[in-house]
Image (cartoon, rainbow, N blue to C red):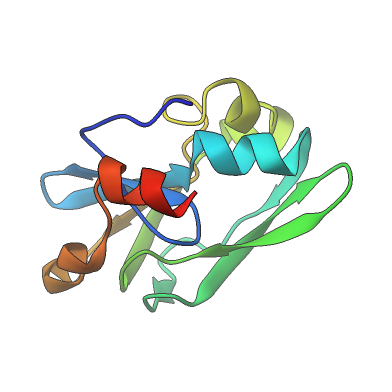
Length: 124
């Protein structure tokens, strides 16, 4: 299983990449493999404020639908438009081209509650 050391993780199987004042968020390799073939992603609105642990969208696979949960409170500033036509990028490249949203104006203190790769591996 692929668990990059430079990312943070949630118990709900999202990953977070910290890029200065920006967070890039997606779902983990474990989550995409459990979901199976992803066919649709419901995105939040741009500029939407989200709260930590609240659902901000859904990810639909052939056999199931799962909520996407906010790893921190913040503002959605970008969604991955490529996933609208190619949602399978989440399956093929979950930590790269398969990212889902970018968040800014986030509560930096909430980053401390996220898991490192070792702690995430323990829960899965």
